[in-house]
Image (cartoon, rainbow, N blue to C red; front, side, top):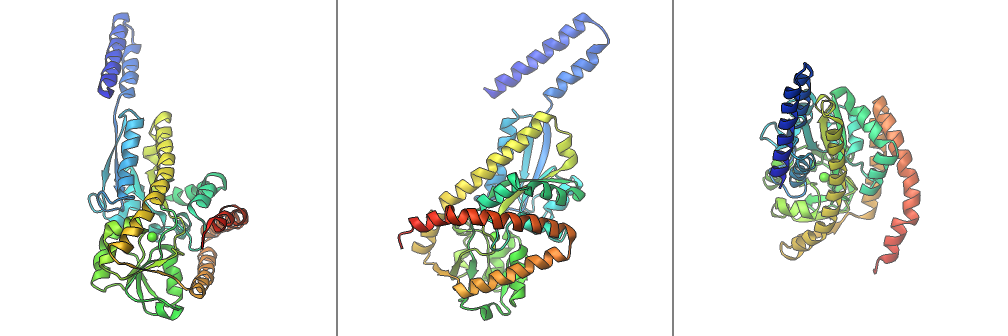
Length: 370
Ligand code: CA
C-alpha cells in the first residue's frame, strides 16, 4: 500500500516536471529540484547505550526509529545501532555531539562528566516519579533547562520513555544498616552512586553489557539495573541472591533521545514535528509497558527463580535520603547550571509533592488492603 502511494507521488512528480518542460521557461530546473527534494529520503543513524534487542530499552529505541520512519512515510529513515555496533555504550553522547550519529537513545546521568547538571534529567534519588518528572519537563520549565544544558554540545534532548520506579538492586549480601555499605562495590550510576559513596560504598559506572559478568565474578558486590522486567531478561538472578526495594536511587528514570542540532535543524518543519510527536508517543508508551510487565516478571523471579525479595530498612532509607539531599546540594553548589536546574527541580518537587500527598499517595494508601 505504502509502495503504491510512493509510486503515485513519484508519478505525480514526473508529470509535474514534464508539464514544466512542456511550458518551457527557466523556472523548470528550480521547480523540479523542489519536487525531487520532497521525496528525498533522509538517512539517520541512531546509536544507543543498550544491548541489541534488549527488552524495554533496546526495543524502545527500535520502535522509536520505526515509528519515525512510518510517520514520515519513509522520508526519514533511521538505522539503529546497539551498544558497541557503531560506538561503545558510553560514547553515545560524543557520537551525537560530533554528528557521527544524528540521534542517540540513552539516559542523561551517563554524561555527568560532560556537565554535572545532566544528572537531574535521568532520575534523582528520592526525587520525582515518572508522572511528576513529565509534568516538570512539559509544564514546569524542565525541558527548557534540559535544552540549555545540552546546547553547548550541539545536542537537543527529548524525553522518549520512562521506566517508572525502579528496584533498589541485586545484592550478594544482606543490607541491614548503613555500615553494610562500607567498602561494598556497587554498580550505581548517577546521583545514586554519589550518595552511596557518601555512606562508604565504592561505586562504579558500568554499562549493562559489562554488569552481569562483573557481578558474577565478584568484581562488584551489588548492582542496580532497572526493574523486574529488565532484570529478569538480563538473568541477574543468576548472579545475585537478594533483590531489594524500593529503588530510592531512581524513582522514575527518564530515557532520552539526543539529537544532533544541525541534523534536526536541517529537517523540514513537518519532519521535525514527526520526531517530536514520535518522542512523545514513545515517552508514554514505555511507562505503560514497564508498568504492565514488571509485575508479571517479579512473580517469575520470586516463584520460578526463588529470588529473595527484601525491603531496605526504614532507618537506612532515611539515612540515604539525608545523604541524597546533601549530595544534590553539593552538586548544585559546585556548578551554576546545576544550581539553576536543582532550584527548578526542587521547587517543582516540593509543590507537586503537596498535591500528590493528597491525591496519588492518599489514594494508593486508601486502596491498600494490608
Ligand atoms: Ca537504574
